[in-house]
Image (tube, rainbow, N blue to C red; front, side, top):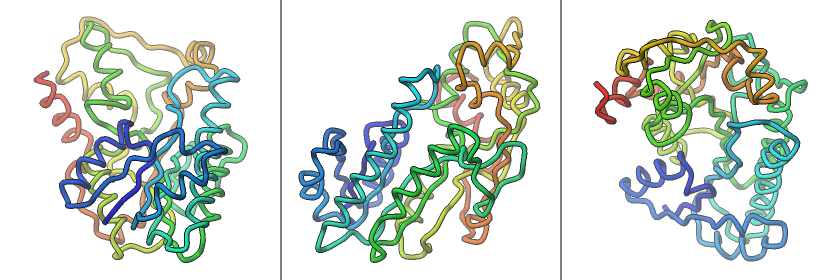
Length: 290
């Protein structure tokens, strides 16, 4: 297949490109400038021969959520997806499938959420994900639409793991908030392999929660990393301090999201890293920390 990918230079995009090319697919990395409002015609021309489109574009959400950051998080997802869908709909020969990203921030916290759980319209991330997905759903009905809701993605070259590991290598084990908040996650290798499956005609249109079947408490997550990195002392950062520093961005560290995927279970998808111990052992070994 010829696959057009937005956000191909990002953490997930690089891993996905590698796996898809190894599987024999041809990847066309969509330049970011083509996702702007004044470039829809050029975008249409660029993706004209694509059999599939994967939409990963979006400003990283880690950081201080000041006004500018919030606007960038929102606009980089909603506007780019709107323009991408407009470009797809303008094509005479449309791609077979559009896989468009969303996130577990779609759901309310402190519940066990599956693909049918309701949207958290009271939170910033809930609104972002709602509007993000709404733009994707405007794609022509001839195109099979798959919406992938990501949670924490574990990999050695991006995401949460290397940031925490780097601090721990300085001898500091950092704990966030109460520590009993639930963390739903997936290893980057499993996520890439899941996309291979979702691209195939073996899966139906709809929403898929991209999470491993082993959610874990934040304190246990930190302790598991600590098995492979020696630390001298522990610091717990209270939620209030995180709120002051991150202005809303603390949700990524203190929010409790217990996400399950009924659809992946029904598909019989085989995880290479189905539990947190195995996933973190692989990441630590790859960085020669054991």
